Every structure is written in structure tokens, then in C-alpha cells.
Amino acid sequence: MSGHTVENLVKQVLALSPEEQQEFRARLDAPSPNVVEDEFSKMLRETGFGQPRKAGPRAPNPTPVRVQGKPLSEQLIEERR
Image 1 (cartoon, rainbow, N blue to C red):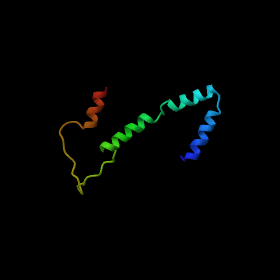
Image 2 (image 1 turned 90 degrees about the vertical axis):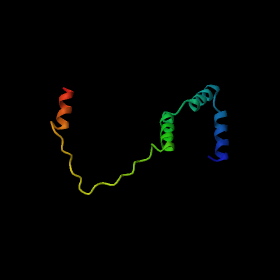
Image 3 (image 1 turned 45 degrees about the vertical axis):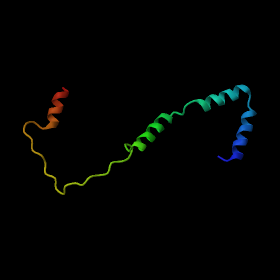
Image 4 (image 1 turned 180 degrees about the vertical axis):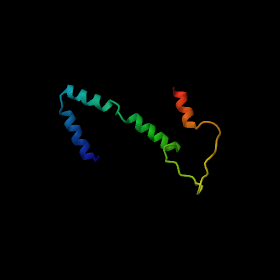
């Protein structure tokens, strides 16, 4: 924001009634709804956790792992009942 724009804004605020100036001040002091989320996202990016993971090398033809017993999906369904 240029200095000229700030000066104009200050003049407009000073032209407000005292009640309107108080409301304006309260709105400036109120936290933005995205401040906490933005700060958290910034912290994640700075620590490296907010970066997308790079895909690792894949086997050209992965072979399925054979397990004994019921399929895992059936075990999960039974446990949820």
C-alpha cells in the first residue's frame, strides 16, 4: 500500500464519528478467521511437513503378499459389528 493511500485512509478514519472509529479499531484488532490456520500452515512449511512427499521408486511388477486366514477386509468388518 502506498503512503498516499495510507494518508487517505487515515483522513477517512478521522472523519468518522467516535463510535465508528471505535468499531473500526475493534475490527482491526479482531483476529482474522484464517490467522491461526495460516500460521499453522506456515509453521508446517518451515519445518518441512507441509511439503508434498516425493514418490519413491516402485517395483515394475509388485507381487502380492500371501497371508493365511481371512482377508483383512473381512476381519475389519467383523470387528466393527
